[in-house]
Length: 459
Image (cartoon, rainbow, N blue to C red; front, side, top):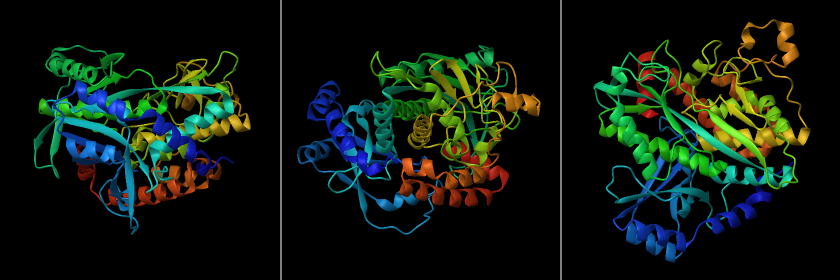
C-alpha cells in the first residue's frame, strides 16, 4: 500500500521547483501598489484562515527563508470554531508564490497566496490537504501513466440581507421570475453584477467558459476552465472569494448553502474530471479509475458532502446526485454523469466541502480502482432515473447500492474503508472524523431557522 511518507520528498521537491524569487519579483513588478500579503489556508471544515503580513516584512521572510507559524489547534476546529481535541505546538505556512493574485476590490493593495502546511524543516505535514492532493496526482501519473484535468462549476445563490447582525441575520430571495438560462426583467436587474463578476474573475486570471442562470431563485453558475487538480482547487477558492467580494459591493450575499430556499433546486459544486495519457503510447485506465470512485462513493461523500444539510441533495427526481451509486451517459439522476469516454461529471460535491480534501478523496478512490482493475459496468441510460427502475433493471446496470442518506452514514462508511484511509493518511482521516462528528452534533442542536441562517452566513 502506498504511504504518505513515500511521497514527502517528491512533494517537497515539486513545491520548491514551482516557486521562487523570480516568480515573486515578476508579480511585484506588475503590481507595485501591493502593501499587504494575505497567506490563506483552509481547515477541515472549509474554514478559511488568513494571516496578514506587510509586504516589506514578507520580502524579508522570503530572503531569510523564514516561514510564518500557525497553531496546530486550528486544524481541530469545527466550522463553529469549537475544538475537538487539545493539541499544542505550531505548523508552518509555506506560501506558493505561483498562486499570488490581487484581491478583488482592494485597489491593488492586497495580494493573496495559497499555502501548504509544513513542519520546521519544511517537509509536508501529513495533515495538509493541499500537499496531499498534489501527492495523489503524482501517484496516478506513476502507476497509470496519465494525468487528471479538473474543472469546477461554481454555483452560488445571491440573497439580500434584510435584518439582524451577522449572528442572526435573515436573508430573502432577490427575485422570483428566474429559471435555468433565463434573462427575465428580474434577472436583468442584477446583470451589471454578473458582468462585473466575470470582469473581476478575468482580472485575477480566471477566464470562465460560460455563465448562466440556474434553476433556484437568485442562483447562477460560473463554469471554470480545466486545470491540473491542485490549480483547479486554487482557482475554485479564488473564484468564490472574488464572487463574494463583488456581491458584497452590490449589497448582496453570495452563498454556497446547499438549499437555502425550501422546496427549490439545490446548489452543488460539480466536478468535471478527465483522464489524459501522459504520452501517446500510454493507454489511460479511465474506466477502472471511475469504477473505483463509484465503489468508494459512500466514503467519498463524507468529504464531498460534509454537513448534515448536504444530504438534502440526496433525493430522486431533483437532478442533484440521485440516490444510487452508479453512472450514466449525460444522466443527471446519477452521481457520476459520463460526458466522454475519459470524462465524467462528479455530482456529489457541494460548496460546504474543503475542496482539497474532497478532490483528494476522489483521486484516492480512483487509484484504488486502478489497482484492483475495477469494472465500471454498463451504467444507466440517459433520461432514466435509477430510482424508477425495477430491482432487476438496477442490478443489470450496476445501480444496486443506495447512497448514504445522512452525514453519519457516510462517516461510518469512511471509518470502515481502510483502503481509502491508508491512501489518504490515517492521521488526516481520524482528525477529520472527530471534527465532523462534533460539528454535526452542534448543528443538530440549532433550531431549523438558526441552521438556515448559519449556513447562509458561514458558507
